[in-house]
Image (cartoon, rainbow over all chains, first blue to last red):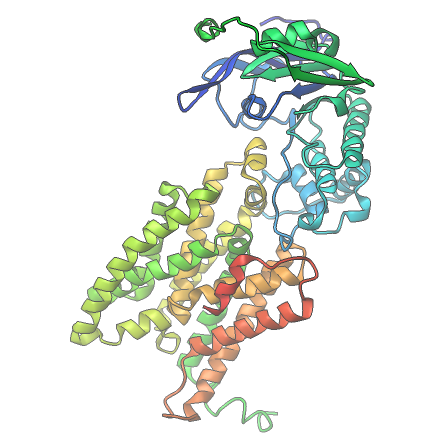
Length: 275
Length: 299
């Protein structure tokens, strides 16, 4: 492990040689990347590519078969206060007696046993956090009746209130209309830069993230390529990652990755498994 | 005052010792049911709750055979069943009903055997009615401290693990990512549920105990959007239904057909159901469909 001067913070997240096998199938192949403090990173890949498994490994919900995950330069602990997590839309019954405000408050002390007693300072903090994600107008509504975009904002406030250094968002843009999509991206980017929080946001479409993304981690069939968009999202780099030819095309500042003509090359994956 | 209320409070109601015990036990049990039941509805485990009551009949009926209070039989059997459900996989939403169903089937077989032995055994012929429909007026006052202890344990677990339990009921992953011991919290809750159902079973009977667990909680969840308040409303509504039920059952000794009194559990369950209906009608369907499990309140 490399030690750096205090001014040079260690990367907030280091993923080293992570392999994950689940029920006899290899889900992640030798995944390596780093996220520096304050960086906005997109975790891009189609459904089933391994994004969710990777997030679960980072969160400690899944143990890697080999390799390791360092958070803030240290092996991750079960409850890691440095990481805030925003799950995909949680399915709640409209009758669930939980206001948006209560869900945000659980971000502060949801892991604590004993009867809840919140100080005035904590209540002020809860209000501030609700305001920061523009959720004041529905703070007292039941979470179960909120729209997808509104629920995302409440979940983001829930994650941010414990002051993490890294915010993980699992497909926050799925099932959102284009306007809410933009709102959520802008909100996360704004808060991340204001509070100097690194962001790792998974998505199957990178386009909504292009204006704010510092770095991309592209996942295809359990393999990962990371770097700037210019480095990673190219015909050459992605073709190599996918193991077959894909074309990266730009149309009106939107990037499309399309399957190219299949080449005759044979792809032997055994080499990566041996690593 | 006493004179004007005489037709409601039959002579002897407040001086009868079995009535005192019934009011205390019924009240305490209704509070436990309200607190635990609120989470049962929120976690979508109404089927598990009802199954535990049915499963408990095996323990309750076995207790008669060995000559101890059915309370111990219910608690023992329900704790074993809760453990089995946990092992089989009640944590996974898809495995939940399966785990419950498998344990339920096995226990009902035992219940059939024990109830058969109870009824063919001359000294315990009243056991079936007792186990299935409760026996709150025959409740021995010596067991009141035991009921109180179990009640403190069941509500204590739920109240002390309130926040982790709420978070893991919303999303197990979210809770686990925050370091909540989700499985441990789930087991603690199942223990509370097993105890609450047992207490309810000895009060209003195994078959009807789910009504007290689910009905007031389901109605409370429609009234308030705050979980602590929902627990309080469910507990209060349960206590009101139970006490009113006891009063009506006491009064019913003068009623047709046989002047032998109607069962308390009938009144309690009917009152709970009426309460739910009134809430349901007055709030309407303004915020979407009701919870699929609430119908069991009438079962």
